[in-house]
Image (spheres, rainbow, N blue to C red):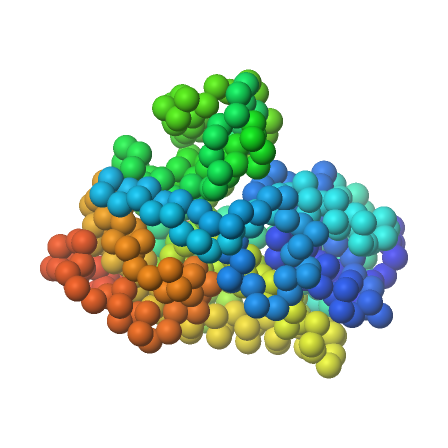
Length: 395
């Protein structure tokens, strides 16, 4: 059974695939794009946040996706609390799905469509349909990253509807003053409305396992400690994101890539090595693809591989910091690394999250006595860390 052909087939309607589709629709309207998403809607159940300073180009593409915005944020630690002025934005999967459906013709957005085979010139679906394509971009994410090592950032988040207003004017991007369990733990709280707040319990941990009942209890305990009276849990999300300390990029690419199929997003290791943050990286790549003279499968595959390799080289400093975080500090003491970091200048912090730290930033981050034992810090740089995924785990 055949389906309509397309110039570009994008596998996965999450953040990476969605931004590419929206960028092409806006800036290359002559190109037909088909998004193939296994779920019932694009993006699943997710909240993506970013600092406004992360985005120099392409803010117009993000604007329709923004569900909430604030003119600053808070961080909390046992020995440091701080209000920062950097504007903060949040995108929801609900908004992403709505915008995708408003921009793409219905026949070009296939939801509930499971891919069984992806080749350079066609995509085969579980229902028997075959979509021929001039180019195929795989944006389906990654459960693991073979030939890479590090740790995990795992989380459970809930959108809470409250009985009375919470009184929070700005988001708490990192509350590291909470009890430390299973690695570095912090809570993330986004006030979407006066009586609605998204609370996420997050861990920098050695393993990806998520104890869902325990994290639900901790979210409830955190809300109770803030005197937030919960009326309902409107939705819940969970996940485990790789935090990269080291790896062999060429071996990784050879193990995961399909000849002729471009890889993007987490599937191409296009994440911030330490924060697992991907939004600004995904946006920059989406804008770059729009500038290509040719949007053939070969041209897009080459562009994505080149972009991912450059990102890997650029991430060397952040991978070193990841090794220090996981290898030098005991799990219940890792918060001290972030507590110290948030004492640095606001502009340095902005560049760090954008993945654009300069040489002076790097020196400043490393200057002074580290908040971990010096011997352990040196030893961590010599180690290779824990494997993030065995060879062949990524499908």
